[in-house]
Image (tube, rainbow, N blue to C red):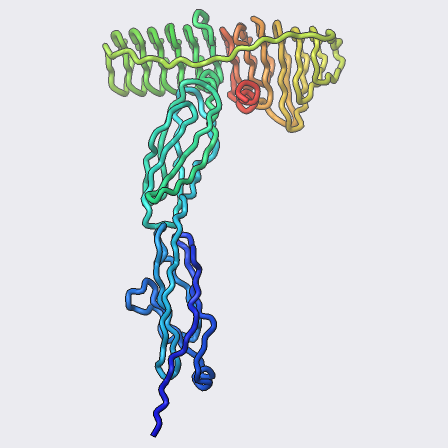
Length: 492
């Protein structure tokens, strides 16, 4: 009797040869052959052993291909062997072995959005993130802050985040680059831009000349923080909603005056009767707390702290405290040369003026001047009683450059359509800015050499930055600075 021996089927095991770590790969048989037509007609079964460890993860499958799970390809560079087996119905089989190369993938880094900060404020990764398909990889981070400082970031492996912070010495625009590397040599990076704005612009009211004063007279209100390089004084009933900084001279808070934040002075701090400070008080000399005056926070004084009967300090008191330096801030400088024809708008008349360079501008009593978005240059501007300035922004910005002076008299009213005060910037190179009694004024008034005088009852929406600033009785400043416009003009 003749025995017929079964011969095993054969085939070629193919594979994805190079794959990224953390991804899947395919293996598949082709060119299957069995000398028995009956075996061929019955089809073949397939087994696959991922890792060639003797344990077939897929057995008896009719599918000639298989997907190698990402878990077997988790870390590159490296490789994994896959054994494939083709079998017929009689149990004959043939094995083939292939090798899949695993490639390392560099981390994908998201450094974060562009940031705008003020001088001396820290810049932080908030945080930055990274991802890496190599789940077994470990990571390190380096931060180039763009000013010559390069340092390690703190990596949180589990969350895929990086933190770090930095303080810049100077205003400017800096490119921050974050590089994250894995333990296999892969490196990914991303960057963002930090714009560090001059520190004075953090406040809506500043007096930048050390020998001059910043004064809020009786009942005047500024809804922001204020800073004076010299003396700062809030008189009876005056108030601010933020912090008060008097760099080189005294800070005086008058009867019933109020500070919504902290008070910091390089010299003495005086709180008069019923004055209040909602934060701390820091003095480079002595602190005097008068009757019924009230400090919510702590009080620090290089000298002594004197509290009159009825005065209250909710926090702790620290006399003889070491001097706390007040960080200096940068101011801007510019020159304006005006040229062009003089412009006169007669009493009760209306004139529409296009952006251009002009000489002297005079708007007579009750007259109306219409300006549009763009840049105007004037030698000086004088607007008489009850004159009107209508600004048609239509989504744009307005820059008004003045060489000598701005004098807006009683009852002058500025209005804007298609935008607001944050899109209006006055640059005055001269020494005099007068905003008249009971007027309504819009924009950031920037006069680094000028004395800005806000008359009784005037309302300003924007910001005031001069060498010296005086807000008269019951005048009001609402903070709405032209920050984006300032950055565009002075930092880009």
